[in-house]
Image: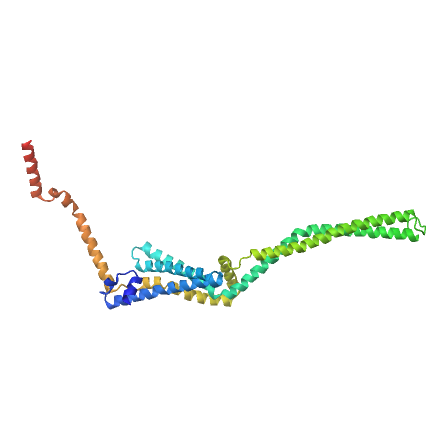
Length: 327
């Protein structure tokens, strides 16, 4: 198993076989901790795409594999990294971001049914909002037309009453007969009845158009609403948490647990002490670095040895003198 553990954490298996038992256990610890977030991200990505976003199973598997591979590379880079304080803080920030994204996306899977209920509320609210918008658009026109119809109805009724009073002699000319005046008033009443019917038909048509427009607006709002949108579902989750304290407490518990699992590699890397072989390796690196510095410090001896060795200087002067004599 040490061979596979070494490959996972980026070590040469032939090199790690010579490690002390404590160092071998540490490699196994790193490898096991590394695989936890990788497995979680594969499962989470698969469930998120297939069950939450309603995607194709093959796409879900491919997404899970790609996500797991990326997380594997990130976590292994965290394990292999060493160095200065900026690297240290970058490692913490990177681990924090990965852990946060992993816990949030996993919560989307765990609380799927609760989020679906909230999404249904969003959908109904959008449909009702579309219907209210159409009603607001038609409201002034219907009110105006209703006033016209009421006025036409009042004029028509008044004309009918005038014709009746003229016919029975209780009004107008006070002659109890259907004469020319009565006929004229009847004609006026008939014209006003036609006007009333025309305006009332317009009102009925407006109301019919309102009903059909509301149906179309609702259908369009329902068709345009995408309940599987990830950001919308995240918003729905946090809206649920803000409304229910019990759900918030359960969410914090789940999220903290998942965050700790995702952040495990960073915690182990930061909190664990160096093994014997790591100290030996660091000491070897320090010695090699000091040796290189010493060689570089004496590089002038290789290019200008006469500055440091008198015999070389004398030989060079002799050669120059002989060359001058020959010339």
